[in-house]
Length: 62
Image (cartoon, rainbow, N blue to C red; front, top):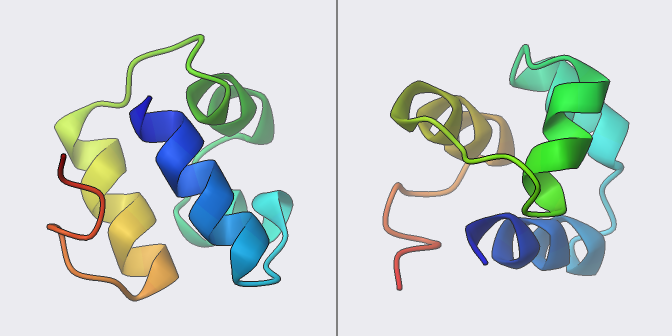
């Protein structure tokens, strides 16, 4: 569900998944699996994604 929330935010912001993955320094295939909730997002990856999106860590907190 976290991946889906982030994926929706990226889509609504008009960003490209590949650009966010690159900026977060996460391989595209790994990033895709995370965005499709097929792989858990580690704390470090979550921090990197939030930094790449320039959002606070609480942006996707449920």
